[in-house]
Image (cartoon, rainbow, N blue to C red; front, side, top):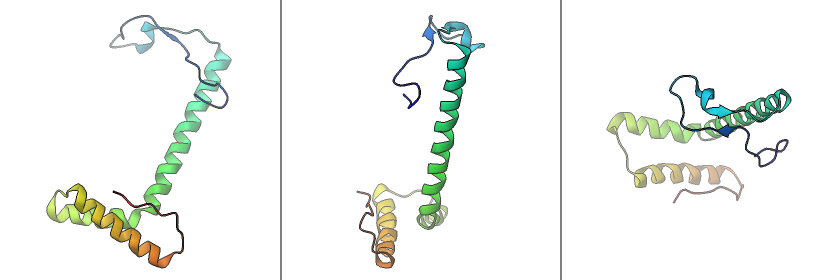
Length: 106
């Protein structure tokens, strides 16, 4: 699904996948121009997702640091322990900010 191509399926699976030469089991039912658009859309999805992941990691860096320090000292933490660390950091952030759109982990 993409803005340019819509909810379409491209290619036809002709049977089981071949271990080497993955395209041997597919029939291409689209032009080179459509293939170029597909490549462009995939690149856009990957780049957008990468940028979003980086932004989330930067935003949550402080919390991730606390979690990693805890994991280095005890090897494992429970979901409750993670939520406690995460929500404690959110509480600190709320004190510093007036943003009401902060979401807690439950």
